[in-house]
Length: 132
Image (tube, rainbow, N blue to C red):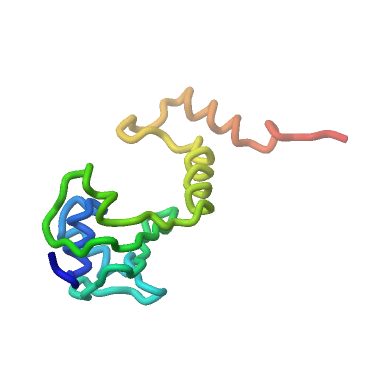
């Protein structure tokens, strides 16, 4: 077992990203940070460091428990990392799920004329009109 490992390999190995390429791209885009500093994919990380991964709309934080390079089964992931994400982030995730009622399910296409009229009437000011 290594004492240090590349961040892109570790992110892939603990199943935070589906492929190592996607993990490296997330690092390049500034979505992975350590102490507020964005990490390059080649950055070596050690056991005990806390990394932050931005997956909109929340920022997840993980403490590295084991530095591994090879992908492990999903059952072993809790032995490799500790989730130290603040509870407020998970509350924000729940609020975004609840607040997304206007969004349509992926793949359902454009709304029909009737659905569009219903949606417009629901979102119009007349619907929420409050008289004194």
